[in-house]
Image (cartoon, rainbow, N blue to C red; front, top):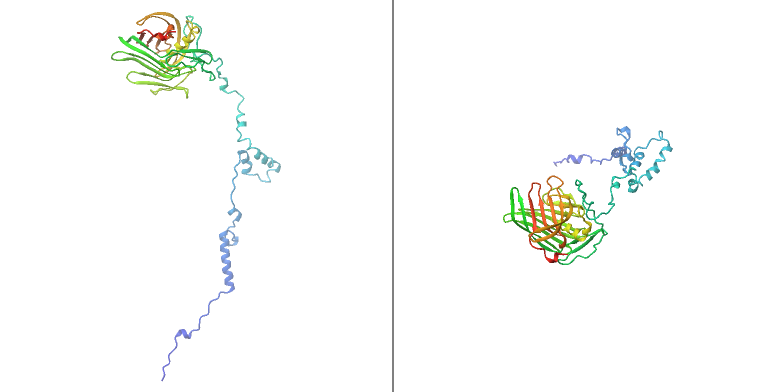
Length: 397
């Protein structure tokens, strides 16, 4: 009997029919997708629980207008139409346009200070243009008056009246058309000095004054030395200009050097020992150059300086600066180691504590070169340098 094989169950099952969504399902799906997009974009209806958000508010850009303070006030918070009448808001617009125009302009702002005059306007403006040095009437024996200010500034338009002498000759300079200086030519002066330091008298001290210039620049040195010590060692370097000698550097040295610098570009004197700078006054000299400057003044115009005349010059040391007032005296006959000399004496008396007294004797027959120099300290110490060798004949006249 033939065997009958049963077909597999899969063969007996009907073939599956593919699923096809109905149009209702598709519409529902599309609606759900649309609602989801609307929710993301903020357009979902209020009934679905989403708070309506204005697309203009969400995606609008912000514009910042930079305006002056006058225009910011009406633009920051415009008043409602119900509370502010239109007539009050319209004038604000042209005011915002015109306000920024004068603001950047500095002229109106500078022209509107208080009507009171500025303090600088009352300052004197060099009314008299006096000579290089201040001088008073001859001394009448009264008590010394306070030291006057240093020499007046030289007018910038002034020009030298003569060309500088070459080599070792004299240099004549006219300052601002008021007076002249006759700077002595290059020379070396030998001195013999006596002195006292404390209770010990000092003898056997010798020194020299070396004066060099080429009509444009100068170099002056004054030294007094003993066998085992140095009484003083001064040096001044600078140029010869419209105001005569114009120092640039002054130094004093014994064991160590201390210097002062004439910072003319800044109008002050600077000290190497870190002392505070001081204002530099016109015509200022140092302790070395002041002797040659005074001699140049008297050599050029001796008639301008009768006995009793006061000459005030700012004199700079290595650590300080002060106005020194020299009183011109009569001619004196000196008996020096170098011989007999006629000399005009100039004296700077101490005017406050710790001032030193300076006495100079300048020889008219030798271009008012110093033939004797004496300095006395407040404690009584002094150094008295007197010409030891005769002056060269070239210095006369």
